[in-house]
Image (cartoon, rainbow, N blue to C red; front, side, top):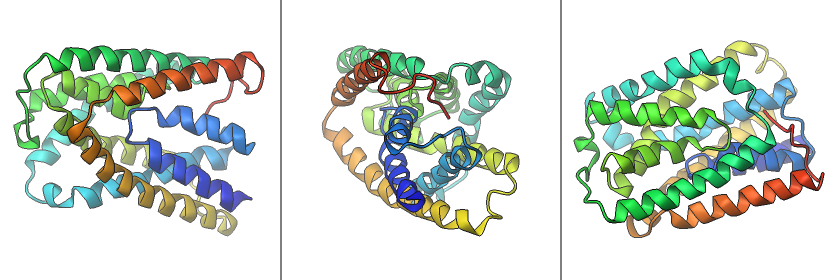
Length: 266
């Protein structure tokens, strides 16, 4: 069953990492359904490592843009600085927030924020209509707003997309930059996880589920990114906002009814 669990979590990771619906919340729910303890050393590291599969998908989708010049890499790296610094300084505090009720609350609040931002965004003219027009200042501001995603249930992509919309980026550009600014964040998180667990790849029995999760996350994320960019070129984020609110209330119901343990975390 471990390989099957790895496949399911790879699917969930690939589906949710770049959509503004909180991959954390979906991982917690999936782990409970599968009967997994994500605080176990292997599974907690597995969750971080398979994110590298999703990151690889971003590189494959945007490889032409990424090799054009250093400008986009400069913006990505500068946008990461606030996330890296604040993440390091606030890591202890953030660890205490990893519980089900926080996830449920942030799912609902994030959904409400998205609806408000969308209504505001429709009345505002878009001043940034391409990645080339995103400035260093925009990158820094989006990086700062992305720090809100340290609160579980917020959604990293959701926070950075909202930041982009508030700064005048159109939906497609805000989404594309959200994908790209995830590169250093998730690579550093993966490297740190491997550093903390140097024996992660030493057990041959664990290499297969790691490989299954990694490859599955890559394939699913690759198609999700492409489809999401097409969707957001024609529609707004309100359907995702409604889904977040609905999922948040489902979480509250499951916790209050005792079906899920509110201390579920990873």
